[in-house]
Amino acid sequence: MKFETQLRTLNRLPNTLLGDPEKRIKYWNESRKEYFFDRYRLAFPAILYYYQSGGRMKCPLEVPFEIFMEELYFFELGHHTINSLKVHEGYILDEVQIKPPRNTIQRKIWTVMECPESSFLAKVVALMSVVFIWISVIIFCIETLPSLKDTGCRDQNITDVNGTVSIVKVPDFTNALFIIESLCIMWFVLELLIRILVAPSKLEFVKAIANWIDLVSILPYFIFLGFTLSMGECHTNNKSGILSVLRVLRVARVFKLSKHSEGLKVLGKTLKTSLKELFMFAMFLAIATVIFSGAVFYAELDQDHTQFESIPSTFYWTIVTMSTVGYGDYVPVGILGKILGGFCAVSGVLTIALPVPVIVANFNTFYKQSAMNKS
Image (cartoon, rainbow, N blue to C red; front, side, top):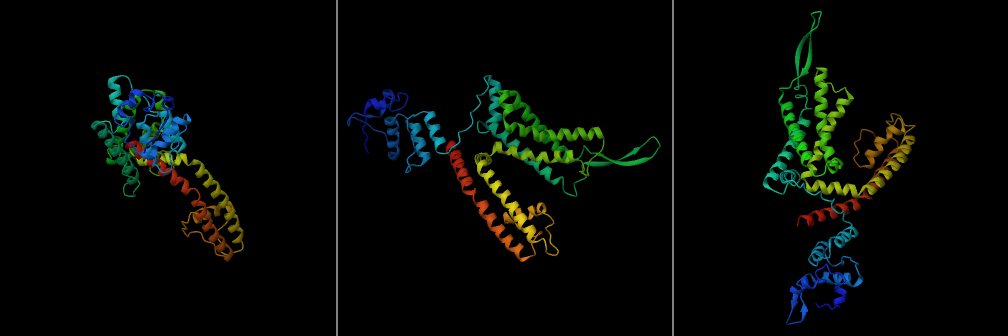
């Protein structure tokens, strides 16, 4: 396949492979008096049109996007052109990478902490971080088992001024779960402090959401420990709302895994890009919930032994039915209520199906982009 054009057309873009005589000369075939490029043929018409049109670029339908990207890089059409095409094709550009520190030692430490694939030591540090995260998550789960609920406390005899002896539960800092949890926290704190100290831009470090997740996952331990030490008692009844919230915040450590998993990063980008569709789904769900809750409540109003005492209490049944879960703990007993329940389930299937194709398309786009970046 041969293509002909004028030199002045190529000279419009002197920084590219075809526009620079010194770069393209090595592809000159003296016997045929022509330039020969052993490249993907179907992609070249779009590249030549880019020169002829003065900067218009579009990926041909018959050319895979990944292959077309390789051709653009080969012909050195520039990052601006390539990034513009990626945005046009629905890709979200990677965040601007922070420049590494200038100090040699600081840069080496920063690379180890922030780039897991950069060296063997970086891989070891990343593996240790993942191990500590999973250990802390496992402890978070198993410490709620009935047989382990009170292992963090021990009985202690307290004698007051009147000589009355009472038994109170005090923290047991020799408990194995507490010791393992403390070791995990020590690693998280050390990791966070090192990353703060070697960060090339403290402002960018503070602005990063991932770093706030790291902080939120650590703080509950110290707040809970300080509260326990100041009170001198063990709070095992979970009646304190603040302590319950602190315990729940510990689950934020799971999100730390996103730093070490490309799959979780792809999922996060997908949800972020699909916020509009998710909001639309939430609106449809809210409207349908109100409509079917009101309809079923009044349809069951005259029924004996009805379980729907009010419209707000019917919201639960409506959402469970629309999501096609159907626990069966709340059921309509009248014929009209059952018919409305059937319509509710069908409408739920249709409502859930609306945003799914867009979300799946976004996921596939980011997955391909991630694979292309790796290659």
